[in-house]
Image (cartoon, rainbow, N blue to C red; front, side):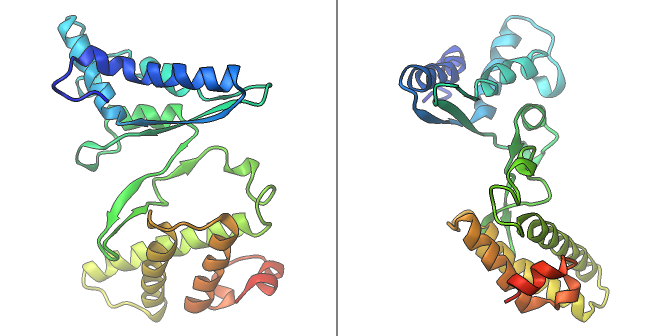
Length: 237
């Protein structure tokens, strides 16, 4: 742990120290290792401090021009080894004022295989995973293949209806009348956030799929979810 009262150079060493230990357990001991790196924004700040003291010309958001390479050197140590060991990296990046276009989260998004974007949902007073800004570049390898057959369709339907709720909320804030469908999407979004996307929810994949079907059935008609009829016949609550 490196705090602001400690030398910035020490902060640059912390990720390497953690990953060196991870490589030992993954390569020599064939262990599956999870590395938690928090907060990578502080690491980037240390990079900025050091580069400025070296009189390097800053790039976007006062960060050094080497920021992408510096982050990639760390993130791309995630690997699966033939011997059975592996390194999984979960890096946390805080956003300055919630700005996802800042250089640190922007570069992180380009390098990593996906991200979970967390925000405070004022409707349920909980921190939730925002489906619009979260991303997985590997989901197609497992969705409906290693997970249940309905996974891709359920995800698409839920996110589409959640987007409809966001549009309904905009209409409401601008003083427009809401339709019955709008009211139901808002009710669905509130339950979906509280029961599925809040970070204190702990469900496995099957439980989450079943819960989503339950919420869809409670708020919509089968014809409104736009899913394959055979899946609706099999899973509709």
